Length: 497
Image: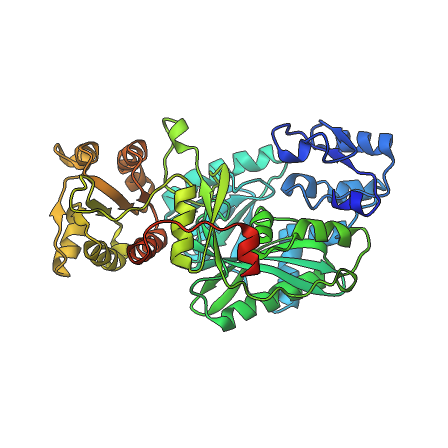
């Protein structure tokens, strides 16, 4: 539609009739065809377009950039070679070295033996993933050699289906904060569209993690550092259009996780949060307009906070586990907007179908259940104290309860399922639990606690499987204590301030 405003006739190729982009009035002509090289070349032969845009359809059309250009098809926007520099692991490492940018230690493997050598040289835990797959498919965190051997087999299976023989083994930056940056560039200048801080720590797929714009806890110097690195990458790659960069911040150091010279799934959220139509501007850049001609500069910091939250289909699939990880599982997104991060997070949770409420004296649901892995116990003490102050009674399994007791936090002990009845599932079924915080580590522990998370989901109880999300929930509950109810304003009102 942006190109139509500029006088271009547009042709859309889309294999998914469920998406909004396949509405009959979006383009002049619409082809329902698979996004394969052969089918796209057939459309090109029929339509004879001035050029083809591949950066607005996700990873699938991006993979066609190099083969299309080799067959004489003109790509509009970022060149195929720049896309390949970001996608090819060897060339990407050379790019980062040239710019003196950091990335987690990593290696490439074509066999189990090579994967083991790489993992043990890096040190566990490691992130195992096939290259050139969508949605983090078959991406897993291995905490031991035994888990690595299982996960590598799955990764190779997914890699073969994607047409590659290699998998990637990366250092896992434990407890790092993940950051997303969307930017616009015209080959001469780069403008930052938005900087988003993920609420869940690194290790949760960016499509599943909630995020905040602007960042809610990063220091200004870190935000400026990620902006500068994003600009340097866009200029070196010669990006024309949109680019997304994923960072991890740990111990004050900034690491590059991934560079995508295309529109990311965060573009609609950033556009709504800032009032700037990034996709429309990118389309104009790809057909020759410049940022100067469009009058686009870095947007001023918004006076409000926007939080994106993911929506999951877990309830529709009986065997689905609610625990989050590097493989994407969400099927939609919502957003909340407010003056503060805490209020915006509460709104986003409500929009996703999860209502956070402070119990009153008559409430039957007034218990908060907490069961966390050992390394999360110090944070769990802090969470329990805050929930107690809000009026919740705290319930915990033996190990977590012992840590709370040592910290002088009043707590009732409940048995795990494998310890016999009455156990935590019986308590959840009783209808007295209002919130669940459950973190776990290791394949066996995840399996053992599956029934807990599943019953929590079926009972429609707010649940949090990361400490970061549980802390954000405490923020939201405390904010609602001072100002009950939800204030509703249109996006236009928020943009006007």
